[in-house]
Image (tube, rainbow, N blue to C red; front, side, top):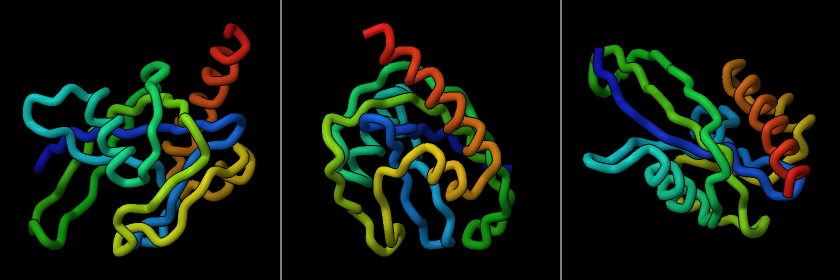
Length: 140
């Protein structure tokens, strides 16, 4: 099995979270591969900006998820290990950088986002991250 380390962001602006629709018709959060000698937090910030144009700051680590699938192009099973970070966007503006991979995107209320997110582990990650984000915002 091919093991790939990835990082991504659960991005909040005010009380909304960013999601986008990928080429598989799945609502997901931005993430991508960690480059050689790159730390996961830096990779998450880079991938968020590359995919969405969103400038954000990391608040804290959100957790990890794991996805296993069979890659047709590689003709092998793959496991993506993803380190997630709770992030706060500087504005609600975004620009989808890869329209061939992502057709729609935006900031959605938590209720909408939980209904939209495709994978159950992402729903859990989103809800836990939102609770932590709210607690952090109360302390500010």
